[in-house]
Length: 123
Image (cartoon, rainbow, N blue to C red; front, top):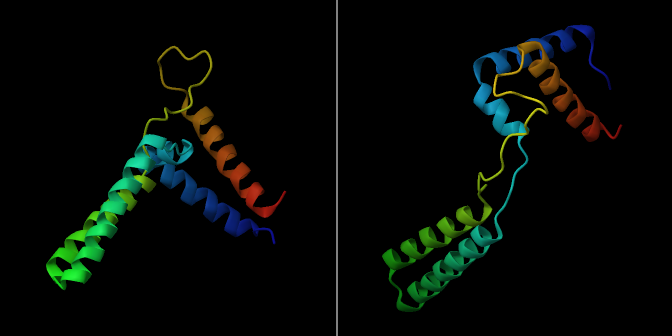
């Protein structure tokens, strides 16, 4: 189901507001997520240690040790699933270090989000 003209105007206004107020968020969302195998393996290893501590705490019936084991396990899972932040923002071909004109940047961002929307809709 398509958007009405009023809804489309409101959506465009919200997008312009987002681009104007939070450029850092827009740049982060436009970058692809990269996961480091080293970070995933390290996080999983820390998680296994946390699960082991949790099991030992249950065997010893020591609640504080169990809480520490749970926190270690949670830290490992967060570490394994977090973004490594290694990916760089896509560069514009032929740029000389100066920022692109605002109209071009807005058009690029708009097309990016429109492409994602079309993919979700199966078009």
